[in-house]
Image 1 (cartoon, one colour):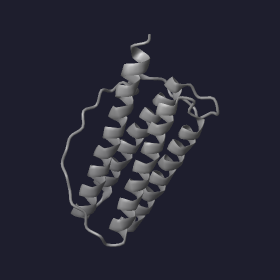
Image 2 (spheres, one colour):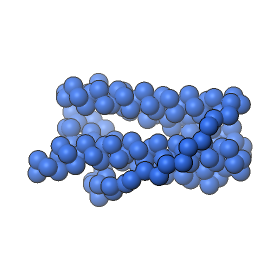
Image 3 (cartoon, helix red, strand yellow):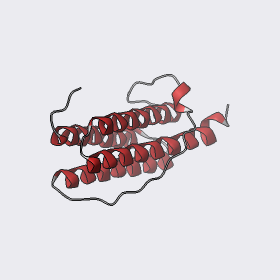
Length: 150
């Protein structure tokens, strides 16, 4: 995908954050496990915060940067893809979430490469790290509750 401006990059990212927020709200509504319902609602809220951060930058606000590298357990990298359906199991929901976060990480990393503005590039790389943090959290949950059971 070719972007003609920083605004196009930001609009694309804002749309993807809305999609992620919608996905996590949907998973929260389907979750039978109250703890997982809470986790998905929390992630929906975090994706909403990412969207607000992108919208703030689009409107001209400067953001403070942070540089943290996030550990990747790579559990989600080796699992079969799962489709969104009404009766997802806990395991399937975690796999779906891990894959979504991995894709979000890649998206932000690629968008950062397309950005000419150093501030926008830094923001996109920071959001990539946020998505990596989300993936790690789902991988830990999967490791603790799915892999240990099998």
